[in-house]
Image 1 (cartoon, rainbow, N blue to C red):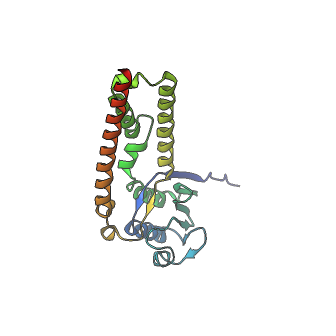
Image 2 (image 1 turned 135 degrees about the horizontal axis):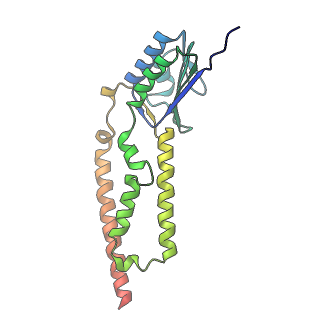
Length: 219
């Protein structure tokens, strides 16, 4: 008779950006550590990342990489908004799990995380400072109940966005190598600059018109 050991169960989740290089490293590590490695999505089981690329294109919305014996599973699920690295086993699974976890964890979208995470996130702070920047004469005209609703809504949105980030809802997968992938800024810089300038001008004009109308109403 012997006492059964309790399987070790560990999991990590977060919003990350994974390139072909990262996925190849994960597959190579699991091949070296596990008897079987399965690459699949919700419809197909693939023999290689090249098959995923051929079937799903360079940006698949869902991808699972499973290493078995010992059991490790890496789920990168964009559609369901959940990205996890998990494992369950009696001990031999820990080394490959922590190796893979380190790869995934190092690919966190940290800038997005700073902007979204927590009730005092950058997003909440920007909205709050924007509200405080409005002249007191205009802010005081807003009913107290409306200001409370706005503050509560901002807090709820900020907390919800932070939780979604921690779950992995903003994960991106690219089957291109990192040096082949055009950066978001490179591809969209003209659109971004135009949008930012347009929004700033629109905001300034709206604020000016609202302020002039408010002043006219006082007279």
